[in-house]
Image (cartoon, rainbow, N blue to C red):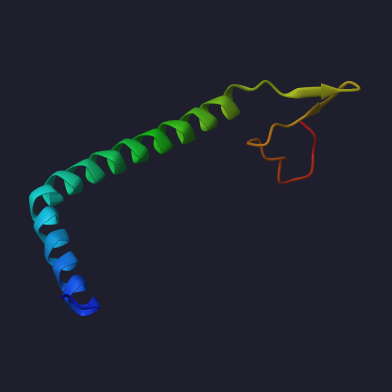
Length: 79
């Protein structure tokens, strides 16, 4: 009968044949998925940046607290 090594070789041949038929389709689908993921990540980043710039400054006890994107003046004066 067949030994373990013969079965392994048969399995490798079967997988290679199936991969030859479906390989290009799998690669194409993986590329499409990667492009979609990249576009969605870019859109999320742009939305976060837009939201950060649209947020009005906070006021606590009459003092304006700058948003995360605003930098305090370099000379140390308050806005």
